[in-house]
Image (cartoon, rainbow, N blue to C red; front, side, top):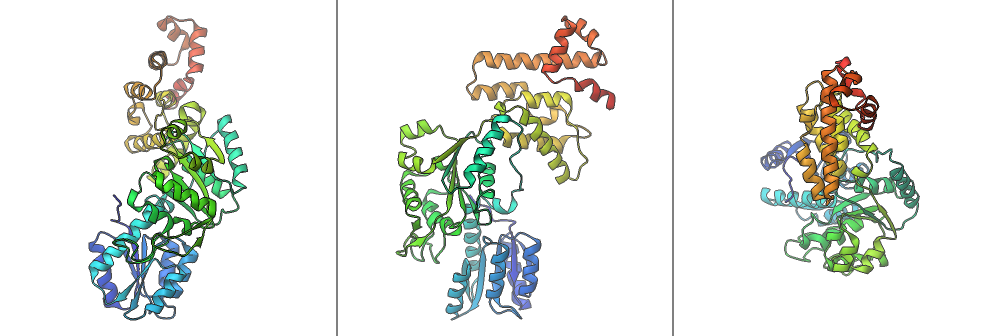
Length: 460
């Protein structure tokens, strides 16, 4: 299901009455609407805000709709653009499509027709940009201080210099799309379009059309010609996320397109040159996927010219604190809050948790904590517990001794922290109460990174 409610629409129409009617119709459909009377005002709006679609009349004062379209494409290559023309002005409509318009409407038209075209255009753009992710995803680099991860990033930047296809492997949430964007940004194609496609989220019957585009009349409902992601990113990069879920029939067609560097739209006969750089990603076990036939051998070898496996967050523990601090800073700023410290016990829980959802799960946990916390982030704000930890590691097929070790570790941490709090941080007294030597306690405090507990208590 694709959501178009609350998308912001820009209307550029100089006739006051029609502009008001169009705004009312689209607002009743659930859109947020900005309506202006000239191309100059429209360009100013486009530079200030992100829009889900532009609806513009051809006949405007000073600059016409085609002028507006050309300037719009300089600002954004992907925002859907719908041009309104007078009845019989088909030559203008054809010119608009050549200049990059997504569709056109001949006046007069009925409101339901406008609404249907608007929905289709926005849904199409959401599909090829992962639910509008190109506009709304905040930019960030791949943060790490893990030596193995740093070496991988160095290798990825070297791979970025050539046009070879790249396959990114790893669990969900490890940052495969961030890695793909980094490769694109360090490549000679950096200034060209980057399009992300979630192959698992795209309806099967729309896949071929979304990749290669279609001609008018190619199938029921195809009232206008439309370009696909291969044309949209012909000189840029296509990121195929969850590529292992792509149907076998489409794997064959995509393989051919990559090899021949050309496509044909669905229902068309014209050959179109297109040679985007392809970066693919999957969380599948590729050996199993190949053995079962889910992924074709020839398709896999075409994608995996260069292959990188991104390690899970539990295997790069030093990054947990780094990412926790980053997400805390980000969400505090986003929510207009002063920076919140993370208490020592909460930090230890973050460090001990196996993170089956990886960095994406950590991001969600920190966001939740920022919402719930008052003056500092405590364990109860995180929403993760020993029970959920054991469940998570069990789901990841950890062995029973490993689960027992984690449970023991958590119990030791809780007890040491509690006793240190009772003794005001006096480790000699704490060692006596715990029945261990002073040296053993010091080693445990260092191992579990608990040295900040007493310091935090003194500073509060």
